[in-house]
Image (cartoon, rainbow, N blue to C red):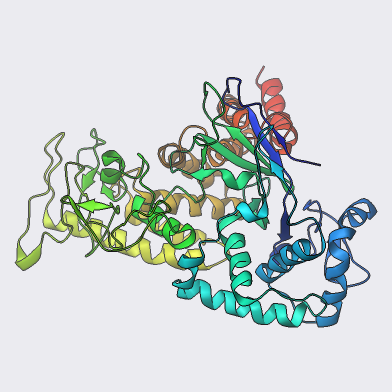
Length: 501
């Protein structure tokens, strides 16, 4: 199936599909091997390839469809067995094979009737890669693997190989399943034209290996120079988002959302002591805590990173903009000096003891969030204890609190603790809206899960409300033909409607 695109001279409505594309090259994640088809990526009963005994297919149809791409790989996988080739090495090998033996250099991926992208159009960031020690170590390890793996292909020279590697890592998309979990990686030539924003006006979703890009907002016309998706998870501080983009894509994001004072004031905020006031309170809680990086400070250029336009950016950024009213150094307690912390809405004053409780809650949670990030699953007891330390201390939209709720919800679903999961979901919804916006796949999926539990608990009125919210979002982000909408949401919505009538 070739890529399909939307006409550029007509008005765009929220939910319109503006680009559908098959991957130039893709690979199923090794953690999904044996439970998903290596061709269509569907989960289910699969059978091993009789040749390499490595890849799996759900049936003869997928095996035949994949053979043109797999036949060269099959012999090489069999030869190096039982060694397992890393995912990145397999992906780079597939790219090299397509470029050397197939249509890789001539293939055109259209995103309009007259505009297209080819492999050579992808940015490699060659100069950035050369100074990136972590990426260069990864590149060196991949080259060693490929020299052993690709005996039947003459590998490009070192400069060309680095260019291929750069194009792959900079332009790869993480392929997501129906639950927004990573199941693979793909390079999509036409889709790679879309730039990033932390306040995107479009979204990329997947149906198997097919990428679909849909508009999140109404637009007078389709201007690809103005289309933006998010490359990263948005539920982070602006500094963390910028840092991730710098490390992975070599540019400093300066979108309106990253520079928004209201978000800077909220992301590490304490709860106001007045139960009737929801104003976020800024309490510095660790040294050198940065919430945002800005390209200029006090009108002077800083040394540091350069973005794609060649602008110079300060690597270390600025200190925390803690109160949303200007640049405030997070280390203002120097030499024992202590400023009074009070709510600028209701005037509630924090004691030193109350500020210390906030600091300890933040430090404790940060440690456990870091540990859970490295683990395959979140731990119910740890999440519940962290939330108990945060109760009435961290603001409801504090990103540390939101991330804890997210981990807790996943953990509670895993152990089927439905009542606790319901309580967490109710708290998580406003945090998701704040960080992801009103039209985001993860928000829609949260409404689905919330509604499904409510339906199971026979709280029909609230279940119907949550599923209707999910329908409004997923109709825009996924479309009515996507399996998440068609096969998961609609049956639940129909059941809730019938049982509540």
